[in-house]
Length: 256
Image (cartoon, rainbow, N blue to C red; front, side):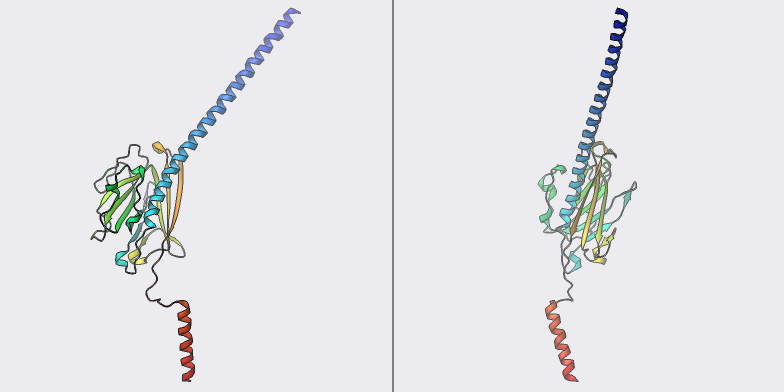
């Protein structure tokens, strides 16, 4: 009788150990998954902050695009490009200085973010962290797949696509896509000298978190409407054109 009781107690102990082990393993796995999810969420949030900063910076300059009936004083140029299978478009636009907001992420002083003239040309380009652009190299400590570079130069000058001061804006950028809307479709390339000003410009940025982890990326998008200068040949208001048409019809009727 005592032997049976001792055997049953030992079995209960074994079962208890197994149950505790299973609970511990399940708890450890749940905590590990929770920590991984929290880390992934944090990385995606940082990536989104980078992507949003890049898109907002480009949109801020586009919102102050110079508008003039004489296209000599206007410039909006988009070149389509790709690097490693990702979009790496380039933008040059003449803008007003009111859009020159400084971002803390640049780490630059006020003198670096201000142009010398009343209007300025600004260029954006996505390039590698170690690639020199205009004689300047990235000063960012934690550069990811690419760096968004911003170039400022007063206008007018002979070289609208070069010169000025170049500095990095956002690191860890995976792709930069800039498209112009002509009223019917989005176009990957644009030149205001040939096409005039577009109706809108769409900026799409993809950024990664620290270390360039491709499994932690985020996308940001901005659409900037461009107020177009009225066509100089259409000078009459709709009501004026109706009255003019009525007068012409009356004159034709009286002549008959």
